[in-house]
Length: 305
Image (cartoon, rainbow, N blue to C red; front, side, top):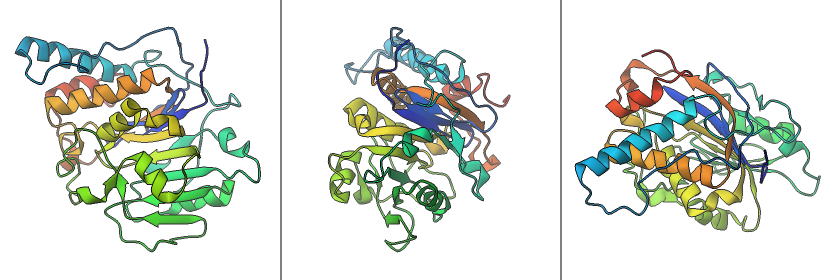
């Protein structure tokens, strides 16, 4: 077994999964946590979406969708998706906050091993008006923390060590008007940028993001595809993600399922692995699913549907 890099991904989801990815990746869910090592010699996915013509025969589409479901289900099957451990071989840690359902884990050693003149850098997308977690990350580790949310109105210097910007991440093949819960407004596409564009705008060119936290209520699949399939995930050390599987939070069509599978397959190809995983529930208003999404979430780490 070999870990090519120390990247970690953590994710969480409402009616889905909380994951932490590292290079390899961390996956977090509310009910279960697991840490894994990645087998760099194994290939887990055979997603047929890439390099296929837009007009495909129904049989080919069914085959692609079947592969996509298999790819996404792999996240819920122990020892299926590549896994990784923190550098100090300890379990990922959570920072206690009032919104307990948003307590995602991360690898502490990756932050504490930074030198005093090399501050850790954290980007947090989708804060929904609260910067409690971001403030604690600055207080505990001295990190420079940048909070982003195109739907929140907050001052730029929102808290000591925390800077706010009213922008969000641009996803690939995502209709931003249809990827949000009834609790949130549709996004203004003019406020969305790629990670590379945001890094340039923040003046962080040449720096690695130590923790990228993604909690954007349904936009994560397109954002993850854009990050991983474009190679921009190389700019990140740990990736914390809240993954949703409901119709009104990103998985409403066959194309959405294919996009989500592309994202996960690209993460694997970029040598990200799951460090921890938890399952999270959701409110009744959001509990509507595409029939293929039901096949994905009926795995061992989800509630019985």
